[in-house]
Picture (cartoon, rainbow over the protein chains, first blue to last red):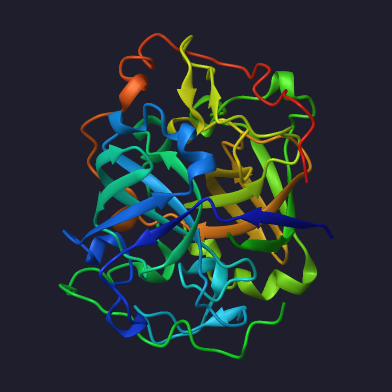
Length: 166
Length: 166
């Protein structure tokens, strides 16, 4: 099996300095503003990004401890495979969030609906394109019906685990 | 700046053995079936994934050559920043596709609308959750109006470039 090496292209800043206060997804982080600081060597790659309302942030769950292949996710009390959840304790701790892009000024992005902890290392940005990214869904597995009574959700100990092995 | 090391958790198999024949996104790969073979050490992480109609595949653009910060994307004849496109020549060559999940049997997933080249290394799988992933869009930047007259699109030389520097 191969290994791949990725680099930090920027840092995500948010008001969430403690994991305990962190929302689970932008869905729950509605209105929360933050910034993304792109490291200077990559700033040229932002040309024309400002035309997009929404962007994907792909980032490294830097606070996640060692991977767990099965977990009890925030929205359920049953055990599920990690790939059937959006939790951070993944074999490759890659996070994915859709945020609103408010402004791009040189290497700084102003964003809204940010749901990651302050200081999260950024790996990639992609434009959110409804023709690619909005697909009709029939089933959402164990999440069926879970969203009906939720108004506000905070993080729990999803990041806790044994120390990640390098 | 930090570096992060990721591992291959599986391999994506598709009918596309040549880059030239490859569609750009699942949007253009409608109906194309493929499989994902998860390496045995990670198979336990698939528990309950089968309940989801759609999944994100996060993968490594293994054929992408060195990154280009500005490119002329497939759907336009103007130069745009790489982060304003979905092209492969990114500083971290991470690909993101939404595919239909047809079946999960042990460590093998049957998928539809696959748009990646055969043999692509898989990094992560996440369930597609409409409450998180379907967000109202106002603007799609340089892509505005580009989808109107497209029925079928094939890849071009988007992967070409100088040899990737390690």
